[in-house]
Length: 541
Image (cartoon, rainbow, N blue to C red; front, side, top):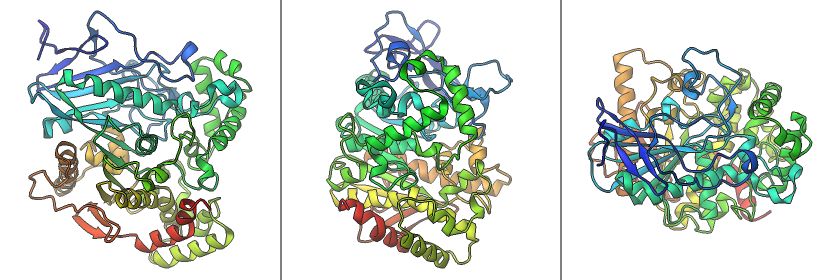
């Protein structure tokens, strides 16, 4: 592999040479902050991304690129992880930059010529987080197996996920999916350039959690991953927030997205695109911070920044695509955590203090009769739980668990090879196994700032050993899936057999203090929601 006289790895990409770093301790190379697009600023603001212009001199890729502009949330990572500001700087209310379209690569210094490639799309409701966060560093993947690990940034919040055509005119139709276009341009760059880094462009697995997983589902619906990815790993998310702001499928419609965007811009005090473009990043984000402080995180902000069904990117929703067999040819691992809503206690400490009917009444997707029926169902199924936790299960089911099952059912019934999982490592008696805790185990990064917020601190040697076991089982299965197309092809005798998902048995791998398979662990809830909601949606009623 070419190196400079200083021992730094040098790789010639299609755009120009990039200069990485050789970590002599780990024996790994990393390349950080490689630009794949022109900065989406000035005339390119709210426009589809434009490929980066070539460069001639070696580009120093020792440091991460900027995080996307976002509200600073300390539960997502330490302030120093989001910015190159002086260590110890006082955190500001927002962080990041619109000029954020970069990607990062980890590899072994010496390895095979054509190594499998894993690409990570981070979550954060499409308005938070960054590939530069410590929890998303790919060194553990590369240390465990000879693979190439890539992570990427994309535009966040209103810069990449709001339809500005309502204030800017029809030329901005589809701006609700510019974040998807950023990701697709990055994935195309990876396919076209990864061989120069020792990767196999014919063996790419795209992974994502939460918003990252939801975004993958829209790429699949649009058919955009055909010819790029052989496999996907989808963690806690399909399509977007279901039934929180409107009955589905209206919730995914372009018209609904425009209406939501217009209301949000009005709350920001912005009436025209000219006014919006006259504001700096900081001026916009200051307004966003003020509005967010007066908003319900779950029912307002987390329901806002999603792709839409549109002829400009994805003409059908992800569930319809799976039902039509459009996912066939791309293998899928998909799963969620056992108590997804535990994470939202970070932002609303009262969330688990309401009866289940209170939560049912907040879902526009349900009729009054259905709200009564589903409340009685959860009161019966979770009779030993508190009233509040029953409502948490209901929200977690409609937002994450049932979409996972519906997508797995549809995809597996139309020729896609599917494996499903459930993560249930309980953090504490109240948060249990919350949303995103599974990624802390997959990356083996619970010692990071975000990891500690997700899965707590390690206290005993026994706890460390059991965490290591669950994490190794997850990582080995995913690596086997990515390298050989089968999560059982790992050679780790401690990992039980993971059967493929089929609707006849609905076998799920449970990762927790024990690693076991179960059949349809949420069957009664799945049956109710499927009959009451999903079958009608699938039938177009």
